[in-house]
Image (tube, rainbow, N blue to C red; front, side, top):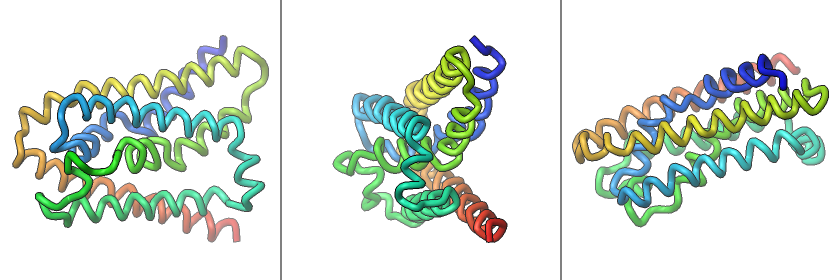
Length: 202
């Protein structure tokens, strides 16, 4: 097995998907839910992200070519979606924020699973690594790197749950606002990168 390639895949996706940086967003999105629901959201988000990454690793270029979608367009759409979530986290009322209510929609699918974890950056990086695969050993290395990153994501979210009890309601509200600010910055950067790519392509 190509250990060097496996490490490169892991490090690259770890930096892009950022398990540590995901923690405040995860805590804010799962606030008000029971520990069981929060744990379920953690593994569901990881499974969704893993599924999206694998699908695009195998069929990504064909899907984009068939639909006539460019990577910058996909990146911009992901950034706009995250920006909507960020604005709700920043401005939503503490009692009315649909993202943090126990009866809210399943945040493990959107925005956690995608586009936050399995976003355009991670998808593009995975597709590039797949293009470098030359033989069975390289394929195993890429697969191992992808799996290792998703295990790291699950561990980061799963073992961040005790922080909810420590922070309590006011602390979670503060984390929610901080997470909204971070998400907004990520979203704006994604859109800016997409615009830059459009200009360079033109």
